[in-house]
Image 1 (cartoon, rainbow, N blue to C red):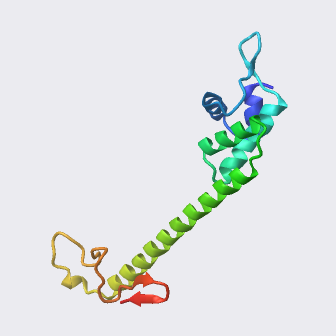
Image 2 (cartoon, rainbow, N blue to C red; image 1 turned 60 degrees about the vertical axis):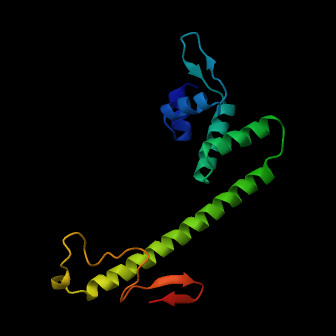
Image 3 (cartoon, helix red, strand yellow; image 1 turned 90 degrees about the vertical axis):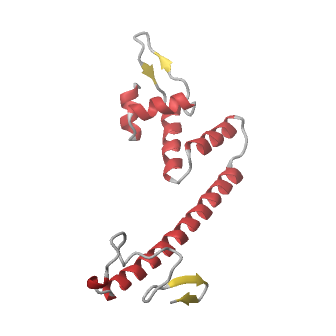
Length: 150
């Protein structure tokens, strides 16, 4: 099949296919006498794997390492489990950071609703926004498990 057919069958763009070829993630295609690339079912499956692995959160570098291990005949299960666990840990840290940001925004919003706009006299800043390390009335800062500082 030609590149357009491959792209449609897997749901990626032809530009993506060429990019993956450049990175060495896909096998070098056979060139037809007219110069067109020709792909086989093996490339279709490999491209589907790359697409699915990316959807699972793996990077192209990580996917390339998995493919290289597979080409050498090595088992990849433990390697993939390690990668997925690393991504889970990173995601958990990101979620915790987002939750802290949400708490801060909720505190600032609550504080903003209690302020009198007439008291806002500093020409350089809005009274609603406080320095990140400063707590004021109505601002709750999470300081650890089960503890809050008001």
